Length: 296
Image (cartoon, rainbow, N blue to C red; front, side, top):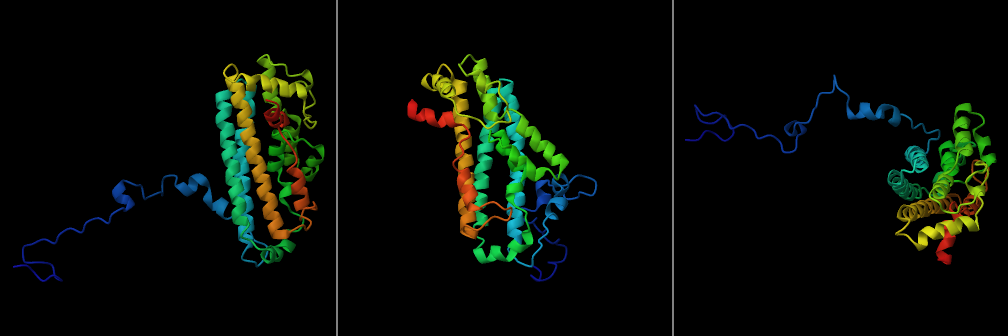
């Protein structure tokens, strides 16, 4: 005879063991005690990362503004890591390694494009509530972004000035300004491969803005007209084109987001805001790679 269903069962019977709850980490062999081991949060220094958001206004939406820009800076840190390594790999004739890094940079830029979608949920009145608290701070002053611009060849000595107040940051931006860009290293590689890239573009003042060259276009056309014979250079050209394509989309989404939020108002950093961003869309980083598509 069975015992009471709410009791301990019939005399002499042991209660059925309670089955483990499905999916509990302890039953998957997961470690739950981190008193003596490094945890996920320890490895990522999450206490420092997640305590770095300090809104200055009482507005709810300022947290969005801060997180948007902090996460963008983290992605830019990875982008710089990959771009610098790609430049070194091209300089060492290690194109397969460079291709992987350049593809990753393009994917990072896609992430940054979609990040603007989140910031675009901020309305003009919501931004107006926090703008007085931003003082003169602006994304225009991002030293990481400036290093990316310089690595991609958009050199401008005037852009060193916003970092003059910080010797450490100025040194990093100045080093990027003085060094060959990604495209400079690509052209030097082509010259080493025997393509007719002029000395004016392989032995120049790296601090000067890049000037388009018909001779450089002709060198690229050699690879594009015979891709089987110059496959890795042809692929390099397409990786660079992918990169600039992604960079233009990032810039364009930045422009549309700023226009949506502040219209044509002056930016906090003193630029013309949307007007400045619109002019930046006209900058071509690798001009011959775009022109050759017409001339093929």
